[in-house]
Structure formats: structure tokens, C-alpha cells
Length: 559
Image (cartoon, rainbow, N blue to C red):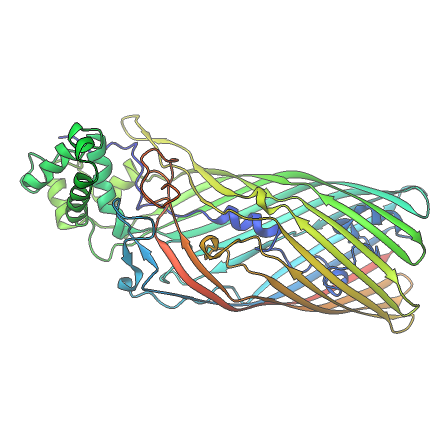
């Protein structure tokens, strides 16, 4: 008796890998941290041309050449207090779209009695950085920065309405950035640096078990490897499907959509009974990797009160590699499955073992994380002996992240046949984004300087159709205050507080991968589409009352 060919991907035992898209957002919107150090946070990141301490490496390495004195070290720490709420439109949030339905069809998640999502962020996250500079001679200053350019953590409830898109995700990024600044004269300086970026991603999603059966049967029927004609449990209906519903048969070509509709009705009716009610499962991807990049800048000071800066950070590709682990322990076969098992159609394994050994083994996952390039222009002007004004504009080439893909490497079954699981991923369709910051210093006296600033951050997400619940980003508005206190000539302390508000936003995200290939642009089944692995379905909802409060301190020392 023939069995399902193990090389056929199974749509329902899959997940949407949004981790890479979310990580790429660490450099624009998405997970861009509101702070690198307290000295810059206090002006809402407007003071890239101020060059007051070694943390200028991040904003413009040319500023290193303007630091006076010997060895300088700045080290800081931040606490991020996060708040965000989500709710789903249960009638429109769906899973289990059949092959004869457009993407986003299928069953309403209201039938699953999901819990409300509530808050989707942990309450507190921590970040930090270390920067140092050392003059080599009167012309060249060397420096190094170690900091987190982005990262974050989302943690929904495991039974919420969007669980097939995202359950939880954690992202950590670290940048080691040695740089040099070259001072030609009092007016001109250049800076160069290289970056070694390390990344870690861990993401978990639920498996769409209710949709497993039709696609299990469909893979077998369409490939000709499963024939229920002779089975008493299959009877004439299954026999008609297995002989007439092959997509390459002359009958199907002649009758076209009429026969397709009839065949898919049989498929859903028969196939929807293979898994036991209440079955559940999940999958987790965890990957590590590193990438390289560079940064450079130029600073021009026409006089001792005004400076202009321009800086560029290159696009970086972080090569990630890790594992995908499937949790199938709670997926049980139904009575119908047991009958097929008794007749040898599916070998002699229970459903969990059959899936692990033939369709969804744990395997290696790998993919590329693209951190978009950014270009900044900024100005610093000492208006009076008491007041400094400053501004920054940063353009971020987020359109480089137009789609995300994660490859699952092939495994082999006990007979040496390849088990292909398809690539996971999404189409982000991100647009380029930007940030605008304005800020100021008020020198209260020789010891105390007060800071304030405002920043607008444009999201790269173009519309609700591309707002995945794994990245509930929207336009951001940041308000900041800070202070610098000089303890003595060799020690100063910076402190800052900021609050960032995210606009309320809608999501109408549809996963176009739901069988073994990605649907066409109209959301219809495409047998010749890109090989893929995902849950399919649709999430419709909104994100609201979202904010990030940050408290930071920074110690600056001169030796």
C-alpha cells in the first residue's frame, strides 16, 4: 500500500518566520532603541555634531578628532519600560484556508476561544554601551564602541488570536565598532570605522493543526503517492478523488474550475477528519550569526561656534544559522487516522512519529539578516554662551528589506529519501524611512548642563496589510530631557529620561504561504509559486496605548 512521499512539504505543520524582518527593523522603526547613551538621549539624538564624548563614534566617527585630552571612557546603562496593547477582530482573523479559497479564508479563530492578547511587551528591558577614545598624535584619534544598535522582546499569550503568526520573539544585537578620527585643521576632520555585528534570534509560533489534514491528503493525492480506492474507509468518494482530481489529468484540464471545486470539497470533507480535536503544537527557531559593516563621517567647523556633520553607516548582512525544533507531542490522530493506520496506508506509526520521521524533523535553519544603510546630516550651533541648538536628519534605506526568507535544510528519512520543508518567510514591502531630531543644551553654570529634544521617526511599514503582529510598529514621537553634571575636571555624569509614543495602528496581515508554494499576488493558490513553509491565515486587529519610557545614566572619565 503506498504512503505519503516524505519529500512533500506540509503546510499546516509550519510557522511564519518573522524574526529576520523584525531584526532588520532594529535599524529603522521596528526595534530601533531610543537610546545609545544618555548624552545623546537627552537631546533626542539631535547632537551628532556636538562631539562631547567618545560615544560620538556611533553618530559620526569624525567627531573623535575633536575630543581634547588623553584617554576618555564613557560607559552607560539604560532601563526601558515598555507598554503596548493589542486586540484582534476575531471574526476576520482566520486560519486553515483551503486550497480553493483565497489567502485569508478559512475558519475564524473565534472558534478556538482565544484569550485576549493584552500587553505584548515585557515590562522592562535593559541596554548598555561602552565607548573609549585615545589620541595617537596631534592628528589621529583612535576609538572603539561596544553597544546594542537594536533589539527587543515580544511575548504574547500562547493561546491568543494571532498565535499562528507569532507567539513570542527575542532579539539581541551587539556592535563592536573600532574607529579612527583624523583632524586636518580646526575646520576639517574625517572618520572611519568597521563594525562586527553579532546577532541572536529566538522565535516561537503555534502550528495550525486544524489545517493539517486536507493538506496532508492533498500532497499525497496530487503526487499520485496515495490511493484510497481500495480502502473500505475511503470508498468511492476517495477513489474518485484519487483518480480524477490529479491536476495533470486530461479530465481536470478540460473541466477546469468546476472539477477543482468538487475535488477540494471532497478533500476538505475527508481530510478534515484526520487529526483529533484539541490537538496543538508549536515550533521554535533559534539562530546565531555575525556580519560586517563600516561607517564613515566628515565634520566641518567654519568657526568655533558652529559644526556641520555628515555620516554614513553601510548596509550589513548578518549570516544567521541555528535550528528549528518542532513540538508535536500534543498532535494526535483521529479515529479515521487509526483506520488508515490499521490498513497500512500510513505505515505503522502514530501521527506524531509519522510527522517527525517523514515530514517535520528538527533541522538546521539559516538566513540573512539585512541591516539597512543610513545617512545622517547634522548641525551644532552655540547660539549664546548659555544656549546650544542642534538638529539631525537620518535617512534609512529600509526598502532593502523587501522580503525575508529562512531556509530549512533537507533531512533524509529511514530510506534515504530527502525530506524537504520549504523556505519560511514573508514579503515585507518596506519603504525607506527617516528620522528628524531637534534639541538644545542650556548651560546652567560651569558644572551643570541641561538638555532637551524631540524626535519624529517614520515607520518603514507602508500599510496595515504589511503590519505583522511580530512588528507592531508605527510612526514614533520621542520627547526627551537630560543633564550633564561635572563632578570634577576628569569625571562627569549624564542622565536622561525620554518617552516615545507610537501611533495607534491597524493590522490586516495575510500570510500568502499556506500550501507548499506561495500564493500569487491575488492570494490564490499557485502550484508553480515559490516553495515555502508557513501557517497561512490572516490577522486583523489593532495596536494601541504603545509607549517606551527610558531611564539612562552615563559616566564619562578622562585619564
